[in-house]
Length: 354
Image (cartoon, rainbow, N blue to C red; front, side, top):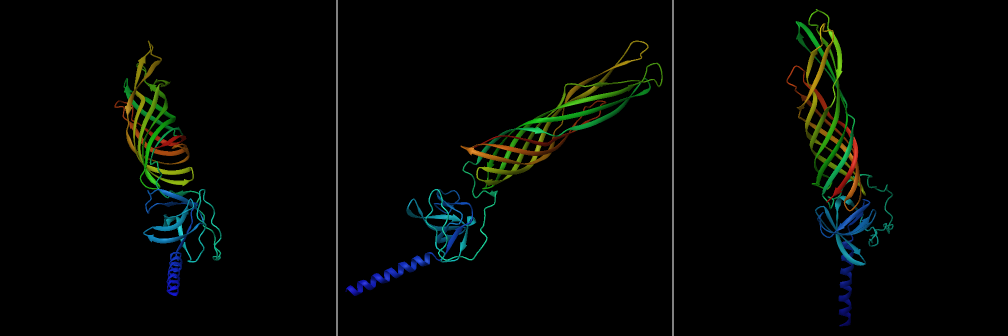
């Protein structure tokens, strides 16, 4: 009777040992700096623990892109799931690392030395492994513009049976921009962003003129005048796709997309001539201005570098190029004026995630 019991216990022990060796037949090694071990095979599942690069774990089973591994959490045996993008399978028989703790510890050397190889390193900036917990963010910033524009409009008209000529030299100065946008992470590393920016740029013009004399032929009166109180204001509405590279609290975003620009140009609308008293040797010329609309489609693209402090609050630096062109139609004798909008801008601001 005792011999039968002893034989039965030996068989059970052999089965358990064989099962243990069979379960350890496949192992995985963590190849990123930190990997999330989740409660189930789902990117949205709770994180049980994080394990460090080089940690070796026994695989219980593989389902799709997920490895079910055995480990110890807080001194208690447990199982969890690792995504295949953060681990690599290694030769069977490599000794597993000690159970990971918080904070994670480096994996010890394997019992049997593996062939020499160059250790894998996580890139300095890598796409996010998973979508951030706070998927919605708001950005508010201030940008300095570098776009200038210059244009000369020449036109003539007939006065006293002779030709009067005018030349309007426009100079559109640089401008500063206030920008606000709302973004949403659609996937782990990419999303969409909609926003608007307001820009104001001063405009200066100098008008040179040659006005025929009312009594004597080929005796024009010449001069010049300078306009004032003119400006170009634009509102840029944009829809961008963005892609994020993450390195701890720092994030690099690359973005681009179409935009629609609503602009108003306060420019010269008419030139008025006033004759002096006899013998009409001089002439007074004045200029009036008005607001003209000029809307246009364009595109914008850029990159930003952000740093997250915690609690969803961070700062960012941004560089963007926006391209669009507006035409202001005066409807009078003065020709239409075309102005290049947008241009290169750079600045920074505040970013808050929700």
